Image: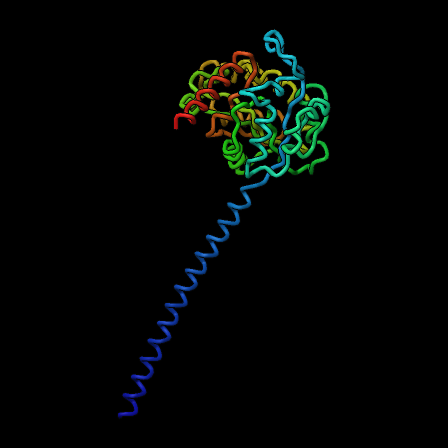
Length: 311
C-alpha cells in the first residue's frame, strides 16, 4: 500500500515537472518566435532603408530672368545663394544624406571643374545631352536596369540631408517604376508661407511638385516621348491633365481628381507602375525658377542666420 502511495506521489510530481517543462517550453517558443518576428521585421525595415544612387541634373542654359538681373553663370544651378552656389548646396545635402550612396552629377565638366569644393561632393560628372530628359537618360546610362535611382533637380536651394532621407524612406516603400515627389500645401505653408508655387487642387488636398523623383534605370528609355511631354507640361496642371484624358481635365478643374486615378492613368499610358510620393519635408519643393524665387530664398536664409545669432 505504501509503495503505491509513494509511486503515485512520484508520478504526480513527475507529471507536474513535465507540465512545467512544457509550459516553459511554450513560453520559450513564443519568446523565440516573437524575437524571430522582430528580427525579421527589422531586416525588412533595414532593407527598406535603401542606399540610393542619385542623378543630379544641372544642365541647360540660364533663364532670361536671371540674365536680365545681371547673372552670367552657365545655368541656374550655378547661381550664388547666400554666398554658396546652389549646386554646392544641393550636392552637399545629398552627400550628407544617410540614404545616398553615390552621386552622379549631369553638368558641364568645364563649369563644374571651376568649383573646388564641388569635387568632393560628387562621384561622377556626366556631360548633359540636350534637354532635361536627355540629360536624365545620360545620367542613368550604365546603371543596372532594375536599379531604382533618385533623380534630383539642383535648384532646391533649401534642400537638407533630412529632407532627402525623408523622401528616400517613402520612395523605398513605394511599389513603382516611376515615383513623382510632391508636397501638400498645408505642410509647405507652415514653414514657407510666402514662397511661390504652381498649386494643384485634388480631392485629397492642394499640392505642388517636388524636385526629387525615383526612376527605375532601365524603364526611362522605354518611354522617352511620354517623359518629354510630361516635363514640358509639368508646370501647368491643365496641360498635365490633357495628357491623360478629357475627363481628367474636368476633374482637375473642379478639384475632384483623386491621386489614385492620376496614378492609374499614368500607369496605363506608360505601361510602368507610376506612383505619387508625398514628402513631409517642404524643402524638396522650394525651387528657384525665377529671380523672384532667388530673392525669396535668400530672405529665408538671412532670417535663419539672424535666428542662429540671437540664439
